Amino acid sequence: MNHATAIDRPPLGIRLLSPLQKEPDWPTLTPEKLVAYRDSANRKASSRLARVITGFPDRGVAIGWQEVALPDRVIPVRIYRPRRAGAAALPLVLHVHGGGFVGTAPQSDWANSHFAARLPAVVVSVEHRLLAQGTPLTAAAADGWDVLRHVVRYAPDWGIDPDRIAVAGESTGALISALAALRARESGLRLRAQVLTNPVTDLTGTMYDYPSMVQHADSPTLTVSRLQVFQQLAVPQGTDARAVSPVHADDLSDLAPALVVVPTLDPVADHGRRYAERLRESGTPAELSEYPGAPHAFLATPGIVPQAKAARARITEFLGDHLVVTRDR
Image (cartoon, rainbow, N blue to C red):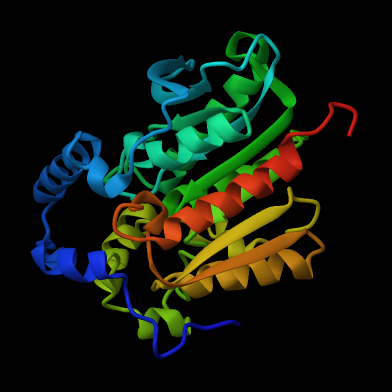
């Protein structure tokens, strides 16, 4: 594995902002206080003021909310569509935001609007159920998968080409995207690509048995204490953690080509590294793209993490290589 060096330091913006952020006392957080923290964080992430940190969306893209009506529930999705795309069907990028028990699609407007404009493509970002007591990871993963199936089933209504589909996500969203790629293979849905940015890939008892978990246990944007709360909510007692841990999947062959994006100052950096290794060992093309000095969730904070721009460019290039092609590929 390619590990971070001892000279890695968070960007200046992170170092200046981190002392101002008041993290909860995660081990003692009650369900009620967790919901209050989540709601407050999501309001901030969606605010205009947050754009200074989360980045300004591409002006060539129309952004709006829509609802996906499923037989048993309704899921909001955030749509990014190029304004000058014409009438031709576009590729689809099904996106899932990060955060786990916190997070919202607008926090990813900067990257998603860029993907929509530059590819061009329709990006559908899933506002999935957030983890909470009674809402494990399987619920969030089902939201991602069911939205993907719905959009593909009604491709003409969405203006997308069902033969050119990719999934992408960050952190928990990357985990959900990886699980969707596995389900797509089993169901016969062909994906062209998967992009997994700072992914969590292991929720089993070995989740913390990686060097990066020790080296970056108290990183400024993600701590092991926070991950422990995430794990407890994601796979409550009695849940099969292995079933939602793609790094432990029995068969990782014949999956969509993957780009695994790893910031080096991240407790879960080795989750991404190991998953890329396992994909390659199974015969699935997988590129590992590392960003020294970048912390977890850096793609959603371009205003204070300069490495986000380079990562966005590489993701755009990777998606273009796999999606902007003819239908008879």
